[in-house]
Length: 191
Image 1 (cartoon, rainbow, N blue to C red):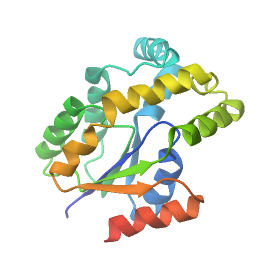
Image 2: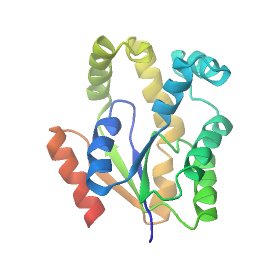
Image 3: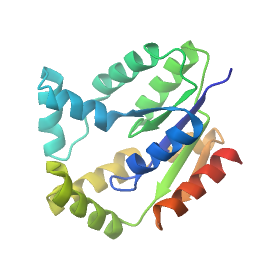
Image 4: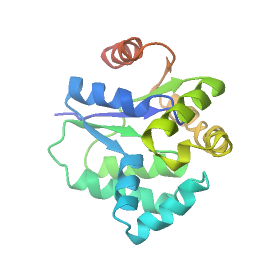
């Protein structure tokens, strides 16, 4: 059986975590969030977690080798999964190539990249609102939030070209009600 592997893509605050929940339920996929993985490491205060917390608090990305290693372990631990929703990963071309190579080893590949598109001011509003309720330190400072969005635009957004060249990119309007955005995503997957 061919696995369905979806890269759910977008800047911080685009709604990837929220939409992942709906998509994992609907399609029976495993949700693989690097943010959740990193937060678990931070909460456990592992050496990796402490290093990640320092980088994330400054609005920086965690290095590829750390993230790729965590993902590789999770894929190998889940041979019976119908597929995965990759949320917050890959973030760089090197990560995308490493993910492709890892999936190829288990006879799979990326099915689609669904890119949630949201304007910067809406993202800032969403993230600061989340920071006020979630306690996440990286969402409390407008300066750090804007730096994270800039990091995404400079280092991560170019991945759309990588998946577009493979015919796997679908751009999705990430503004509207949660249900409207979910409907746009499922249409792209089912189409």
